[in-house]
Amino acid sequence: MLDIHINWLLILAANFLGLMVVLNIILYKPLLRVFKEREDSTKGALNAAKEMDAKKEEGIARMNRELMEARKKAKGAFEGLRNEGLGAQKQALTDAEASAAGMLQKAREELQAEVGKARQALRGDVEKFSDEIVRKLVKA
Image (cartoon, rainbow, N blue to C red; front, side):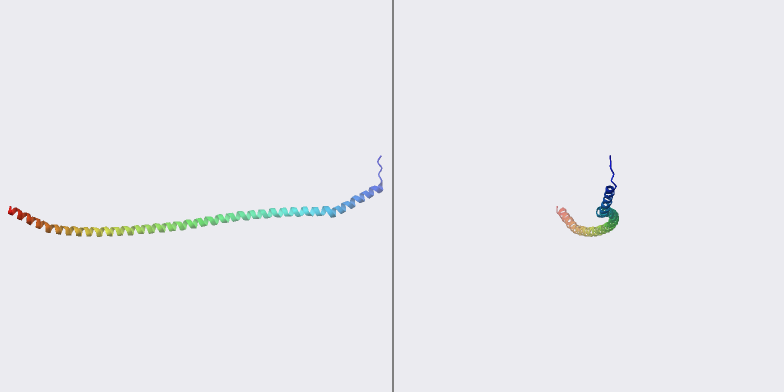
């Protein structure tokens, strides 16, 4: 059968308890501390990543707002310049039409003056031709 020796049982129990105390001091507590530090580090890194993600989202939203504002400003400036250009174009067209109308009126006046001179010259020639015709008819 089984013999239980109390002396050996006490020595083994003392050995076991001593080994547990030594292992607890040397191995278990440092390992538990390392595991705790690693868990804290992981949690810290996850929290930092979440904060960075939130900052990234906020930055993207701010950038999109600023981009929309810049587009609105650019569109406003473009519309202003476009309207200014259309106004300048209309003014230039009006000036050109006025200038063309003035030149056309001047050309008409010059043409009428030339027509008047030509009529005067033709009247003088008509009188000469009619005198010649009359002379030729009278001689004949």
